[in-house]
Length: 247
Image 1 (tube, rainbow, N blue to C red):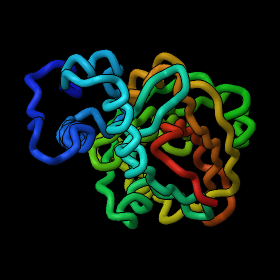
Image 2: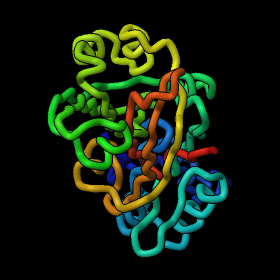
Image 3: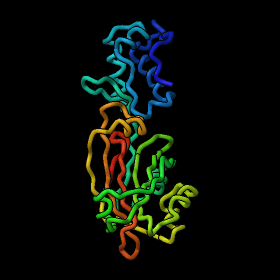
Image 4: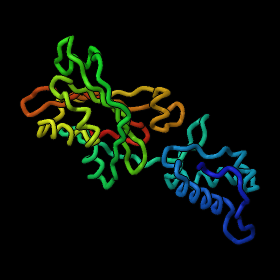
């Protein structure tokens, strides 16, 4: 479903309420009832809206300006008008837990496993985990949701020698914390986190349902157990307009 581009106008001309206010109200209703609006969807063009409501562009612009003042939309020069998404604060500290962080902010977290693969380990991952050249890792790719909206695509690496049963356990729990707990890691904390940003790849754009050209915020993190041994290396790509990283 998309924001309506063509319909029979419901404007009441001569009612005493300005046409731009009626248009703003109707567009606001479209935004709040459209399933994809929370993903930063672009509104129809001025040309489409003038045809829909049978008004001039000035009236449409006044309605859009009103929606922007209320924080519902934003105008990006040369690209159009986009629905504003609710920004989720995501804390980065000694304890980084996806579900706990979102639940603490009255959000409903959910994770979807995309793949669990055993294979060769990239050099930077091997160095971060302190592995020997011959040691392999599990790579767990996961899509994280907040209130049904995809906000993070993450890849998690674990040593297969230390966690030989990780794939089976993870398939049952779908939770990193619960899986590690079942495998004997009662607790763990973040040793370090690096933050960077770049344009989203085609795959990231598809999975996170991003408008073309949107960037992603990236965190690269190392988690250690209570004895200080590195147990996980993660790379998380966050939708930049949906998440605010807080340190």
